[in-house]
Image 1 (cartoon, rainbow, N blue to C red):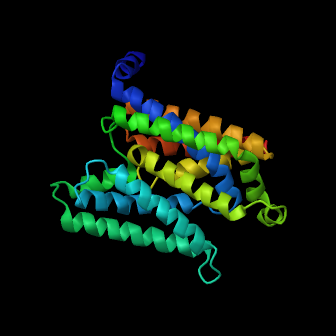
Image 2: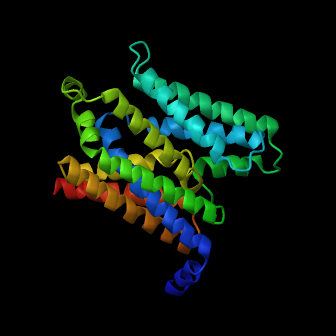
Image 3: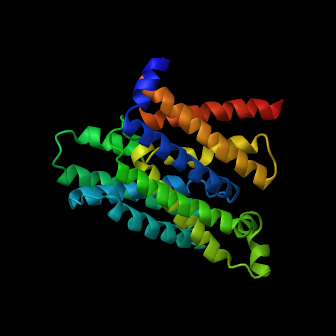
Length: 275
């Protein structure tokens, strides 16, 4: 097993997967705590389906760099989702369901009508559940992930106190002069960035698990916002690394394996929290 692992780690694309997996896990876990506490957990799920639709559009247009299409479309929908969720006629959960299902159906319809691939089912499955191999990650993907991750981490650290205020008591934050709408918008844009980063590794259907499970696990044991955030980040990174390594050894799909490890960790933390 160790020899097999050492052999795989000698390949650049495996190291790329480890780097990307750690960065995505770290970034998604930080915002996950805020989304869970604001009861807006499924925004990741909704935006991941939007990203699937955007990827279908990029495929139809034969765009080589799909990120050029996926990133702006997902960001725009994140803003629209936030605005629509604040509408008294369309509640947040309804807005997410509306955009999520619509984008998923629209994306699959486009792929079915305009696909030139002989393996449409395989393409759709890879997009929804992540690639079954690491070879889809290139050095360009890694550098893009590193740059965007640094930006996300810097924004989170710099605006940590404002995000904390908006997360726990948005009305009080507004009363003391905090521009809550601006920081809510910032959170939505960061989540959109994370969705785009994670799309190739875990797939559009599994992205929200990276956002939700580490935060929920940490909340079973810790109570303060800072402790939960730190624990969530550490746990998410450990689960991502463990999932990728298991995937290498067992030959299982990367995204599904990472999520399975996150689910197992959640079960363990639930037992610890009861003890």
